[in-house]
Length: 330
Image (cartoon, rainbow, N blue to C red):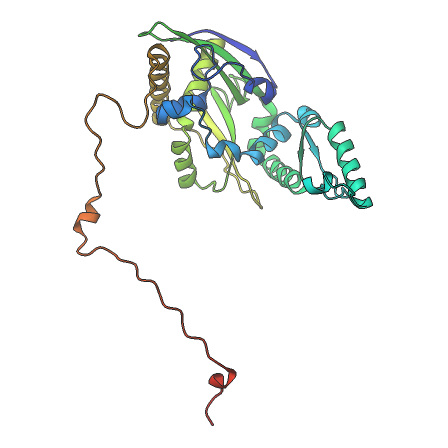
């Protein structure tokens, strides 16, 4: 069960939220929503250091989050490469014994630029794309009103006491968008900003299942409600594509109550698995020890196939030996 829930504050920088000094496998490590999803997929893989490939390719979404929701943090978090900046010198140019005057000038320019900008350096095209996407969202009155009336980057912490092992583990969440609970349109809801390659309803539904948005929504709402005493019941997403012309969903979609209910059961199951693993030192993988021997089966269509497909390498078409073969007959 959740206990000791606290509202930490608003406009919390990601660096503060993501800071973690404890090692995986330590009961003192603070559990976040994405960890719960990895525990359900393969706890052993996670505890041994697995990082999802998707987690390394979210640059557009992170920069958009900052520009749209916490613009005051932009100067500290990002620096845009000027259009007239010299090309960044290669490692070979930096280490050259006798670099050219152009290389020396570029090395000095980039050294000064990096030294004066402690934040992340981003290229012109990414900056332009993010601001184009932001402007498109602001053109929509409903979404603009939601962003304008809400608190952003809201951090909540709590503890989870496991009923079986008795372990207590820390939890935390960073909620993108929290409107006033009594708002006539958005009251009772919380929201997350998502950039995607395909914002269509069917594709986004698949993404929501693949990336466990139900776990995130249920987990965030339970922590918020425990910290504030409110009873938020809806969790939705501002969904925008990460390429021109940055199409988006409006009205922004809510997760169904069935989806959220399943997410609630899943995150509690994940915490149960996590606490048991902490207690026993045994982290479950794809197959469960002590159960039946695993079997790899085939689909019905495979069994009904009369013959197995055996690909045949196609022979290349013969090329003419000389131009005379291309001449029309007289």
